[in-house]
Length: 259
Image 1 (tube, one colour):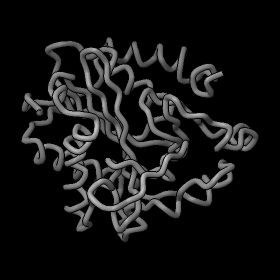
Image 2 (cartoon, helix red, strand yellow; image 1 turned 30 degrees about the horizontal axis):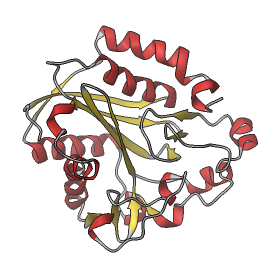
Image 3 (cartoon, one colour; image 1 turned 60 degrees about the vertical axis):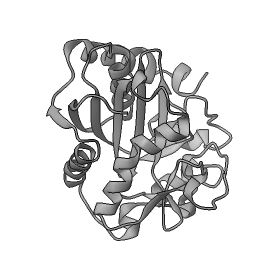
Image 4 (tube, one colour; image 1 turned 90 degrees about the vertical axis):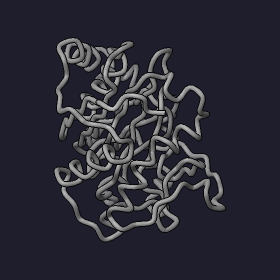
């Protein structure tokens, strides 16, 4: 359970894919015992992200990816290939002990409750796939997969969430799709990108800006867990760590393409 009622709140706004993933990892690497837990919100320029163990070129067209120079970054978390650009993402960093007694599925359900409430505030009935009779579908593409802890609205997956556990910290990040530019992203895929099985706020009838959605997400998170969010920015150690990760990892094919 969440045991601290004061959290650092970082609204990073729109960043490059490389910086987004570098900052997420820097926050995790720099997190130490006694630190305040963290909620971070951020947006993306058009990009692709892939799970830590995802394979790329069976699902993506390498020639098109490279010719169009679309950023493609590998996350530190699991899951499949995900499109970005019309989404607001969040990341959470907290002591691992808080949810040590919960299994993976239960911890997802607990932490994603603020997302369920967010969609309820927008007047949509959101639910976990495992709460209904939904076939589990394995895929290297996030929107084409279906796990028991995925969130659905009207039978379609909305966004995705993934975790990473270290010895001392629990990290979770996820995506809230405001819209999905299907015509832009479809040429990058060799296989079904899963757009038909997924939805976005715009598809559901809600057009909302990143700025307004960020306010609503922060308010809903605070209300759901009974915590106070303190506006903050990266400290010097986190910023230096992020810059090193950009230079040495998130701009390198050895990490992003696993080559």
